[in-house]
Length: 91
Image 1 (cartoon, rainbow, N blue to C red):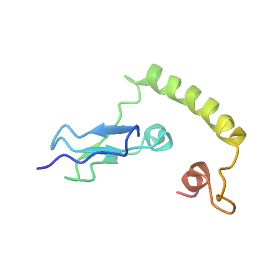
Image 2 (cartoon, helix red, strand yellow):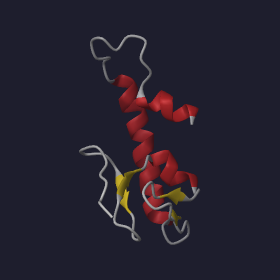
Image 3 (spheres, rainbow, N blue to C red):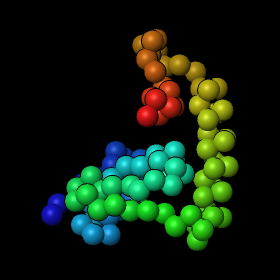
Image 4 (cartoon, one colour):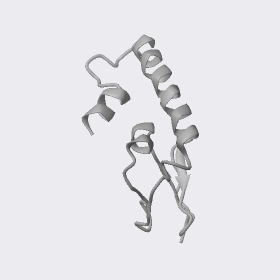
C-alpha cells in the first residue's frame, strides 16, 4: 500500500501496520482516545502510564503554544477566518 504523508512539517504518526503517515493534533494525543490510521483503520492507543512523563511535556508545550498563537498577528486577508485553535476547540 502506498504511504500517505501529512503536510510538510506537520505532526504525525506512522502506522505500524501499513506504514501510512497521518496527522494528529496535540489535543487528540492528550485525549487518551484511540487514534485511527486513516489508511487501514488500525486503532492506536497511547499507554498513559508508560508515557506519563512525555505526555506531561506535551501538555506543557500546549500551554505555551496556545498563548503564542493568540499573540500572532492576523495575516492580511484573514479577517473573519477562524484560527486552527478555534477549529480544534469545536471538535
